[in-house]
Length: 422
View: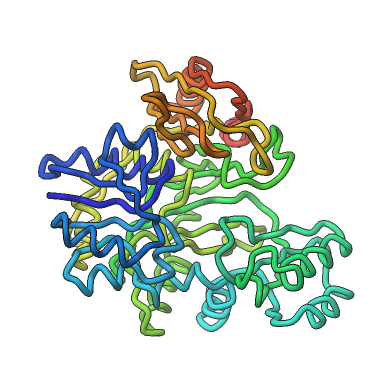
């Protein structure tokens, strides 16, 4: 089988490494891929959002199956375009990808179908939003309606910060048209849990839970990032909570999308907050999360391609999706200064042994060498029988990788380890 994976980050590298395990796979293309992915797939210089070129490429190369991994092409309708030409795909169609593409849609969906989430108000002009903020509870959460590279959510600790966020999003157009509408919602407290799930629109198979570390600095300080590291499983996500989530969130969401005529097939990501009132949805993503994928897929014991094709063919209930009972830890190695500004072009040296698995995100090939080209450069993942052991292995390997300007958090998994000791 010839496969195409759309995307260029650590998530796509993890997916490609998973797909390579299937013996029927003869060739994997990545579009656009990156310098590290090039070791495991043939990289093709097509932008992830260039639907017409992607369709033409698939036809020309006789691609048997495509995995559309990032949010932008899914929301733009790449799966619809590929399937219209007879190319089988993993990922939701445009009408279902709106669950991530529009915060207003997803909040209204949850309200309509009584799926637990934070209380909220929707605004389509700044004056009304600013007027509402005069008496709104603080802290509060302000979200741009559309996609914003994971940066469209602002937690405002003061009324002044909240007002500045509204002006920045709605008037200054920090996120372009994504900020034409905003959601202002209740600030929830509790441990956060990420649960990726396979679904074919009928059956939901949650993957191993995980915990992301969004802040740039140790002890959850500094700016929000796309994720500085992850661990799996998440110790706060107990079997009892999992049962509650299946009954009150996971299945109701799939049923709600079906009722709306927007059947969701692919990977549906549930970002959850375990509040004193029970689990609530913070956000939905219409695809694999990054860097969560980098700890979840290494624990998958089933054949990833078989699971994906079962989703496409709506026979997920017929297969047994198995995960290891081990633990996984991923430490992100970033460029100093991320997520604001950072220098690029530094040579990366990675040891050849297998103490940990390295997923490449922001790197390119230059004169035959791998050099930094992004903010998040590498994800270093290790698995072990215990979380402490997985973290030790991951950090041990991180210290052996070199590139100038390298930065990483030193406390990934610390909160989870404390929770396990309590």
